[in-house]
Image (tube, rainbow, N blue to C red; front, top):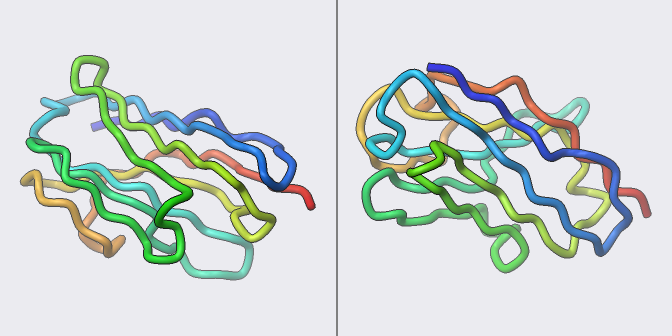
Amino acid sequence: VQLQASGGGLVQAGGSLRLSCAASGRTFSSYAMGWFRQAPGKEREFVAAISGSDGRTYYADSLKGRFTISRDNAKNTVYLQMNSLKPEDTAVYYCATVPWGDDAHTSPSEYDYWGQGTQVTVSS
């Protein structure tokens, strides 16, 4: 399984970015996908997740209303739309997928396959 994240960059506070994560190596629609982020000196934290079959979504409480996760199973891609960005959203963002099943999880330990990360920097 390979995951390739893209779409990060530098944006001013209040701006938006859309991250993409292209997956290959297995049947994409059968597996849950997640986004996590890690800021310097901090642990990796859950951002959002989406189930494989019915597209149920889960968000970190602090990000609800600003971030939206979605997936296009025909394109084997999961997205993270980030709006009203804040300087504290600055981090490396990682996409990940579970080793089996389509139930989404919030713990990084449930995910075995990770993308390389994409840097998001929000300036004040």
